Image (cartoon, rainbow, N blue to C red; front, side, top):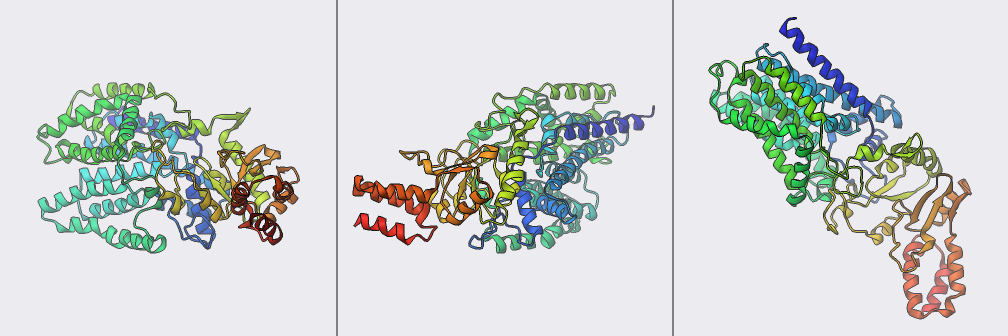
Length: 569
């Protein structure tokens, strides 16, 4: 069989394997629902906002503008809420397959059509976490593909048109994730080098034109609309503050898990310093440039991951550089002439990457780093996963119950799906303030899990008129644990805590579902007032302060307020 047929047959099998594995692992990460909600509000005509609160300024609670716009396109085609999940899964898998195919194409070109095996393509298709995060509703697979495209142009830039394409891809990468700026800088460095060496300013002009024509207007619009130059999520995660200790653990655990990747590093160092092949003037893939390009894209990015402390999701922040590292093997094997080395190295990488050494505790959501797919797909009941349970409770039960009402909820990490499925007008994320400007700027209580750990601010939630808190621990530190805050939605056995009591809302909810188990707070007040004679003025003052924030600030009840004020005179 001709070498070409062998190579592209294996490449096709690698793509099919990548698609099959990603489809088998499909799920929707909770963070994806943040982008889903922004896209839905945009298509509904509210703009790119998370909440529909006229009193709240728009908050940029996403970092993936291009991906969010792509989600919005799916909604414009008429997809429903659950159809949007499928749209995100399909395109994530498509990008994952595109990365595998592009690795094969680069390897074929690098070899001048003489390669036997697409080593990097086969190896990347074998990485479990690349496959599991591709169909997760996130921008991860798109970002990986964009980074690899930029590396391809940085290795061998032939003309101004390719410089323009590289710049265009860089714009999309920077609009997909802020850390795309690192790839933009790396790619720009090689374009600048070519501009100087070739004395071809059109290369630099071509690379810079997309940024001038598209990215600068985007930045100006973003600042005008949101009032800040950086996304709110960067503030919430304190991205500018180093968290090197956690970042180092994040990187270390990943490379221990996928230990065969470490073998790429000495190869990278060797060829980066080794003199290029005699044919390097003819093919840039045979010189030092590919190795310097890989180093320029990979090393600063890994340093960035260490600096910011990694991510709470295992492997997500390191996936963009994996195809680049693996590509080094294709390049090296073109310099090492024996053909038999290619299938041997490919098989060794595929088998080794399957024998991953995962760190302990990835299924524990309280750990600093976890595998969110494993947690979401955990069996909640026979045949029902945790993700299914959230959808049933939020979409099938709470959404019709809350329909048309000004319900305001507080959600923690892992509850963004609740905000999306219930379609409530206001949802405040309290774990880090990803979608809330006030909470995002609160200092961390203790910095550990990335994107989590902001202090509780009950007064802020009360001022925003939040009624329901999805964390059952809310305000239970009070001496009496305030049992009148408990509310149980009996049909789905959902236990929440009340932040404030909205008389009209609670009456309507209990009218719609008579099985809601909650103390009538107005009756609680009447019982309290009946026994008030036995309480000291200090206790009365303290309790009235709590009752005021919980009830009187949100309801017009002059009679009961007057009785409290009389007792406090």
